[in-house]
Structures are given as C-alpha cells and as structure tokens.
Image 1 (tube, rainbow, N blue to C red):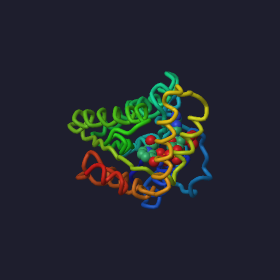
Image 2: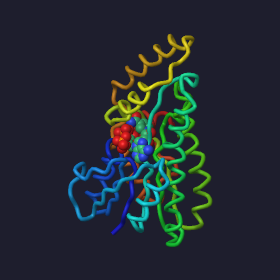
Image 3: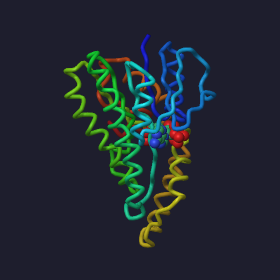
Image 4: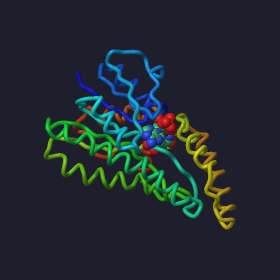
Length: 249
Ligand SMILES: NC(=O)c1ccc[n+]([C@@H]2O[C@H](COP(=O)([O-])OP(=O)(O)OC[C@H]3O[C@@H](n4cnc5c(N)ncnc54)[C@H](OP(=O)(O)O)[C@@H]3O)[C@@H](O)[C@H]2O)c1
C-alpha cells in the first residue's frame, strides 16, 4: 500500500488532498500545525501528526514518526498581498520561512529514505502568480518562484536516484482559507507609506472582484496533485484550475 505525507492539512487543498488519497486506498500522513483528527474520517490508513514547517524539530519528529513514505506533498503556505515597502523584514522572513525554506527543509528530511529506496515522488504546491508579474505580490510571488526554480533544478539531480519532483501551480481559489488567513496576517501590521494608498485601494478592489468569481476549485488542485504523484509521465509544472491553465498557455 502506497503512503503519502501532506503538509498543511488543517484546511483547503491539503485537507481535500488527504481525503482524496484516503478514498483511493492510500495510507495518508496528514500533518497540521495543530493536529486535529476530527477533520478527517477515521481510518486505520490515516495518521494525523503535528508539523510546523518552520520548525526543524517538528519536521524531524513528524518524518521519523511517519516512517517510510512514497510521496511528499509540500502544500503548507501563507499568502500576503502588499507593496514591498508595506512589508516589514520580519514579515518577508515569515513568508519565506513557510513557503520556501519550509519546503526545502521538508525535502531535506525525507530525501535520505527516498534515496535509500531509489524511489519517491515530491510535489511542491506553488502558485500561478509566478507565471505573470502582479502588483502587491512581490514577496509572496518571490517565495513561490524560488520554489519553482529550486524544484526544476532539484528534479535534475534527483531523477538519476529514482526520485520524481513536480510542481503544481494553482490559480486563484477563494474557497479555501487562504484569503482569510492572509488577511489575518496582513491585519497584524506593516503600514504601507501614504504614497501607495490610492494604488493599493485600486488593486484591492480589482482583486476583490476577481476573487468573487471562482476560477480554481479545490478539486482542480487535488486532481493535479493526484496526477503529479501517480502519473510518471506528468509534466514537471502542472497548472491547476481554469485561470492557471489560461495563464500558463
Ligand atoms: N487558495 C489560493 O488561491 C491559492 C492559489 C495558489 C496557491 N495556493 C497555495 O496552495 C497552498 C494551500 O493553500 P490553501 O488555499 O489550501 O490555503 P489554506 O486553506 O489557508 O491552507 C493553508 C494550510 O497551510 C498551513 N500552514 C500555514 N503555515 C504553516 C506552517 N508554518 N506549518 C505547517 N502548516 C502551515 C495552514 O495551517 P493553519 O491552519 O495552522 O494556519 C493550512 O493548513 C499554499 O501553499 C498556497 O500558497 C493557494
């Protein structure tokens, strides 16, 4: 029986991906910052483990407790929409610690076991924002674009070891908690200089309009992750959702 470890399973794509793999007979290690078994149907093929991707000890403990896995899905991530000057250094580091270094350290933790087996799949959930420059997204996009570049280079050195590496690029999906989690983070701080206020208001209003139209559904992302894990002929970059597919084209 195949097993998958997924980060960020408390909501959104991670939670739905865990359900999808469970329904298809996989062993699932669903990891969350606050482990909550009630979020998923009880199953002897399910383990819910605490894991904060910014905490090395938490990563090491979860990977050791999980034991051998066939696939890792790096899904945990946080959003941020603001001008660069409206983003403190502390916030930049927080975003990179989660979206970028969290991915690197998860992969560092699972590679020895995958290398020993000469087998494994790693799927990194990035974003379609990396396909086009967008206002107020310099920090978030940079954190995900770094993951794209890293994944594409890593794929070259892991392929000879039998390990596949893939990227899933979701489009805008208002159905998850991504927007509200980002708003909560943005509410905490980081005043932009007055010079940006009118531009920010304009971009936010346009953003609100597009967010109202659902472009990417969580199931688009779940199916892309499933394909990335199970189909060896899947391309390295897989856009997920109608808006992401259109941008990639
Ligand atoms: N929704 C979109 O429009 C969209 C578009 C493109 C890409 N994405 C990407 O898709 C991924 C999933 O997002 P989503 O839309 O499903 O949003 P979501 O509902 O907010 O889910 C994000 C998950 O990441 C977890 N997380 C945050 N920081 C973490 C940390 N330090 N350690 C472990 N887990 C952490 C959250 O856990 P807590 O409950 O503990 O906060 C939550 O489970 C993210 O990487 C995001 O960047 C989303």
